[in-house]
Length: 385
Image 1: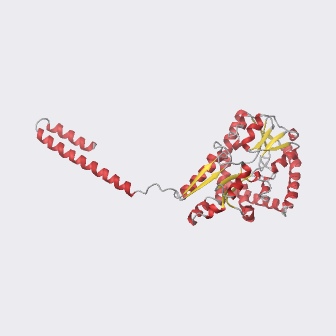
Image 2: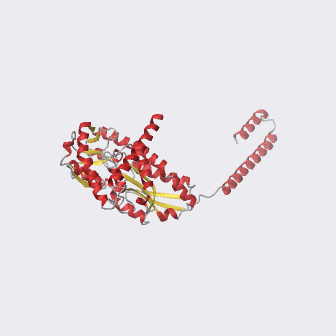
Image 3: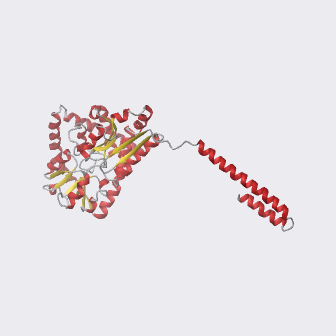
């Protein structure tokens, strides 16, 4: 239209008032041309709209449930992006709604029942919330076994392939760890002896045994209860990764954040998580959509999750340093702590799993061997970058 109007303006300047009838004829011609252009444009738009596929509804809708708040990185940086990627890879045929904060009912210990029984389709859950249910996997929570999350995730991936019966009731999408547990305390802890008699929130049975071996008192509670326990003085501190610290405001409730001056890992131990799917929900999908789920599972997903959890630690570390003090138990105190907790916790676990017919020392040796192998690969890969 700008072009047509410009032509008309030039014609008027050239003609002046000399030929009014000529100007009228030209104006009529230009108006007809403009009308034809508008009609053609409208017709073309209508054709394109009719040819475009309508926004088709997804063929399958899945519910993913977990208990952390939506402000937690595990929700907005891990589960939601994973769900959106699956949807995109399916071409819109799968839709996954992520329900945080226990919106579908129940507490953390009920999540694995919910997904097994088909109450929900997928869960993100802590295996340690149901002690004894996954006895072999618990070995990865041992003190001083921890390493970089990518390393432990890949070792877990290898371990589960050796023992598929551990999750036979589920479609296992991912098994992984966080960056490891630091100790967040209301009072400073400079020596191993300072831990004696203190009360700590813990996430799982084996973490409780570690605390007891320190001479302290464990109190098991979901992470969502940690602020209440600290603010009311029910506990003196909590074992948590830094990743979740801002989400549950632990950095506002304590002043001291303690890790270990230890070569392989500066954390006391770690926790094992799973993203698990209901078997019937998985099998109800056609082969091509099951393949979409499978492509977003396995070894590369384990690697991504490890890298993601390391990245997610940074805001918690920064907020903890800004509002309190980060410190490390020195190597000589770490050695004392190791003497206190490592062998007693192992012996206690060996005895317990033996009742289930499992060889605890063999499982621990396998876990260590897999971690060492993956650690060597990780170190080579990192050095080559």
